[in-house]
Each structure stands twice: as C-alpha cells, then as structure tokens.
Length: 205
Image (cartoon, rainbow, N blue to C red):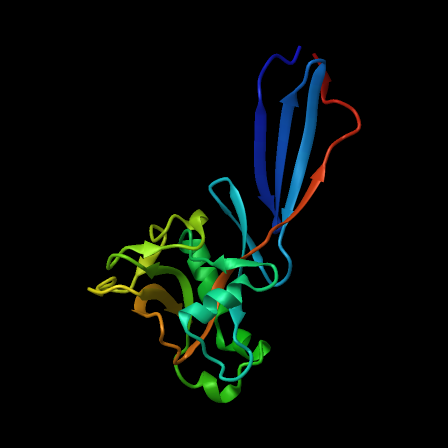
C-alpha cells in the first residue's frame, strides 16, 4: 500500500537536470518526470532546487562595447531572460572563464580590442540607495554569492552597476552609463523543459 504522501526528487547529470515526482490520485499513484536542458552555448546550473541556464553574450558588432542598459537589452533578446550573476563560486569561475580572449575571438571581437582589459556586466543596479542593488534575476540570491573586489561596494551615490572581468571573478561597481571596454554581459536564458508521464500508474493504492 503506497499511503498518502508526496515525493519529489531531482538530480543533475551531464548538463541535464531531471526532476521526478510521484503524486497520489483517488485510485493510484502517478509517476512523472521532467528533463531540463539548455540551448547552446548556455550552461545549466542548479541553484538550490531551481535549474537555470547562463551564458555570456557579446556585443559582436561596432562599437564593440556597451553600457549596462544596453547589456540588459542584449540579455533579454531572443530566449534571454535578463542579466544574471553568480550564485556561488562555481558559477563565478565559469562566468570568468567564458569571458576569455579565446571566447571573444570566437564571437567576433576584433583582435585589436583584446590587448586591453575588457569587462562584462552582471546583475545588480543601485536604484534608490547606495550599495543596495536591485536584481533582474531573483534566483542567484542577490549579492550573497558575489566575491567583492577589495573595498567594494563603496559608491555613495545611486545608478551604479556591477561588473566583473576575465581572469578575475571578483565583482566591482561603476557608473551604469559607462561603456568603455565593456564587451558583453552575463545573461540568464530560458530553460528547455520536456515532460514525461508513463502510460501506467506507479502503483495501486
């Protein structure tokens, strides 16, 4: 006898997140599961129990650099959901590695622009109070997962946005309207969901 209970379980395997759920009905129990994946080049991460897709998007056309407002629009284009940031150190390291000169070349950034430091925007903008950042993506716990550059945040005014750079997963702040050497952004993209449900029930009640 199955009893009256509810069971749900999820696990990550080879860039796919599987969620299994058993739910009771009047006569039997139903088993269903969902497969969650990301479209290339997004990478799947699990934040607590929430699966998300992250990718670095580059401004691969002239002027090759963008302010934070334009970065937000870039992240919302197509299957984009807006800017995101790191949930933990693992995500921060992946974001840092994706914003590399090699990836920049693959995405059409001219070689001449790779001789200087280049940065990319992440989620976080101070709107009403200094050092208090509003987020577009609520799944990464705000700034709790960020590793701050020494002395940051420090601004005493608002309309300051957050960024990081290749080779250093530390987070710093700067004027949101700045665009010099900002080549792209960390974006959250839509996840691909496939639902499965067996024809037969899991067990009889």
